[in-house]
Length: 274
Image (cartoon, rainbow, N blue to C red):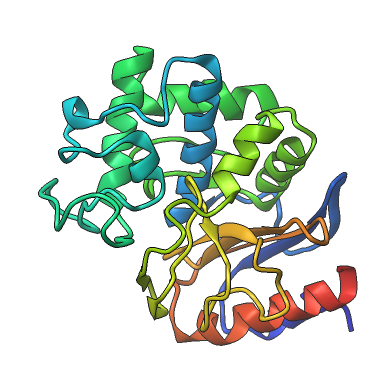
């Protein structure tokens, strides 16, 4: 039985999945052209756009973000790495100073969007479209609302995004390394849905697996695996050790079903394609 066959047994109304290699989809199942809300997987697209802005010279990773409503001493680097001290949600009152703890923060990405808008003269939604969606022809991707959780896309589009990243068509190798290497690597924090992790590594915009346990990827994923999952029952990961990625989009909110199902699927995908 192929690895993706197991999604047929999930108690989920609709699910689309794709295994991605450097040249595109290796295998897929379900409506891969359907647009699903991404929830926090939106942060991956937003972060890539920020790194495009850094390469263009309009945004700097060490920019102070106070003018965009960020906390004293916080930078773009801190916001991308959830190390600014901002709370998960709500107002922009920090819970502590930067670099003290990894606090997963939707608010931080909204400050980030305001900073990009200030520096580029473009609304963050428009900038993400110009940086990613239009150049790659991502016709099933919609960019509207919070860069923390407001976007929507399809398996086909996210596969195209991963292929473009791997091929260097969006970012230079140094930018990809910065995005996917743990920043402030010793910080502890809470991984949403999975509890306290020490350390809780995060790159500049994407989660890095490290040695987290429990986790939504498989124990057989390499520590360098990077990606994100979303409350909408969505996830994306890329394992650079084997150059294989997995995208799963569903219409069932993240919960215990996903905690059980996602690592099993990842393990079977890696056994089949790794």
